[in-house]
Each structure stands twice: as C-alpha cells, then as structure tokens.
Amino acid sequence: MLRERLERALTTNQAETDPRSDDPRLKGRTYAIPFDHVWTACVELVKRSRGWTPLQENDLDGFIRVRCRTLVFKFLDDVEIRIGLDDHAMTRVDITSRSRRGRADFGTNARRIGRFVKGLDRKLGAEDGAILDPTVLETWPVEAG
Image (cartoon, rainbow, N blue to C red; front, side, top):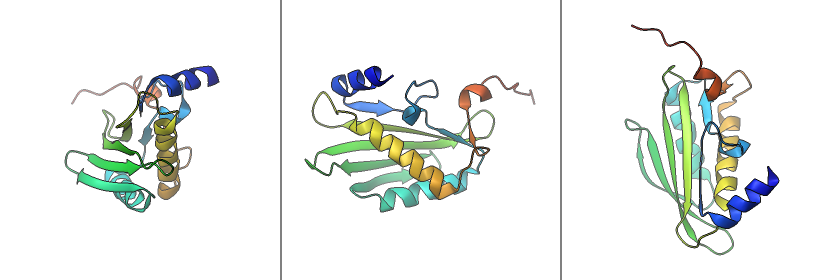
C-alpha cells in the first residue's frame, strides 16, 4: 500500500474520496448523525482551518468550496466538500482536493483530506457506531415505498 501511495503522490495532483479506496484517508465518511449537525461542523471546521478560505457554500445543494494555501510555497489549491444523504438517509461526506499547479502534489491533497475527516470526526464526537462503512450499507435491502 505504501508503494501505491508513493506512486500516486508522484503522478497526480489531486485526491478525492471513494468508499472503495485502498487509502483509508480517502474513504470519505458516512455518519449516523443528522445532516444539519454534520453541515454545521464542516462549515466551522473550514472557517478555523489555517490557510483555508471559504469561497461558496450551499446547504440545499450540499457543497462547500474552499481555496487552500499551502504553508511552505503558498500554492493555491481547490477543495470541494460535498455533504448529503445517501440511499439509507445517512449523512455522507465526500471531498475533492486539487492542486492548481504542477503535475504531482507529493501527497498533499490526500493528507489534507485525511486531516479534515479526522478533525470532523473529533468535532462531531463520532465514535465507531456513528461512522458507518458505506460498502456494507450498499448491501442493505432498500424497502420499496
């Protein structure tokens, strides 16, 4: 897994969450926590994150767009956080982080996503029962209404 991370860091300038990612930082989150609590926590976390400037947020469409400035070289990167309800009415958070410059980010975007979701877990007080595995949820039977 370390080799795949290194290869990805040297060949791409973006990272995004995916429930099937082999990188645990990039799995995103599915919470058994109400949407409004997760939304508020995301907005607060963005506003207090060093180097993050909120550009646009829309709770009806469920997205927050942010400009991030790297600490060392002051490069600008783009982050989009998507918050919504999945098919089981659980709150799903997915993130995309892209570097504006260069062809390799040396893992910056994946680390940024990982730090954000860990901070979000702490802010929400999410414990094991509140963070769900979306790949298991896919096998839940969906009842017809």
